[in-house]
Length: 248
Image (cartoon, rainbow, N blue to C red; front, side, top):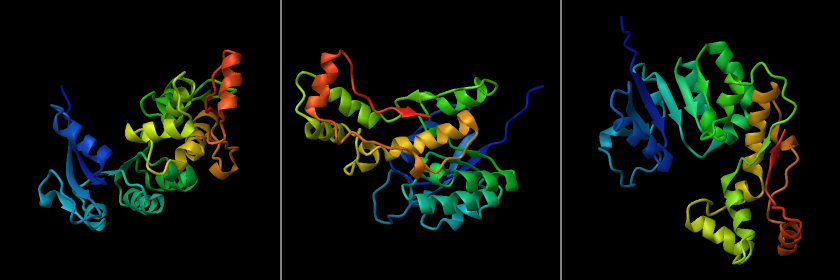
């Protein structure tokens, strides 16, 4: 006898590139038991491809709606995101977030709330979701004694460093500018190039690899802004490449 899964009725916070992409995937996937019921946004005057009735400007319209059973948080503000996520969990809703800063800096609090409420908090998209590393650590290495996890976790810096090794490289500023034009880097690339993004991801990886919650400010962090043409030259002479690695 087949069992019909309950429909996931989603309240979506944020409707940028990722939010719109999620909406599109859900609507073009036949048989998927999920629907976006309401979308919370900030800008009242921005043109959007959906009817105005799909949107709200008040978080409570989603957080207190008993019809909505899943909240997907896709906003930039980590503090505002924590309020949304913690309230949703306490209101008995499952939560999905891709906010690595939120998860890394408030992980213990979020785990405590999840434990108290019994609600589900899913954040695999926050850390190398396309690999996916969290699922691998939890499902395939949960009984193994790991000694180290190491890898490239930031695509922006990897693109820039790869460009710097090319014979036609115009230097760091040129590589960064190209990354920004292609959409790989933000207009303010500080979180990426100064390795804050990598530190947040390292914090999350440490929790799943070794069961420890680390303050991301305590992680030794070195970005790529200090990499010089001389450094690249020396690496190439030794048939090596310079990469930004996360190691825990």
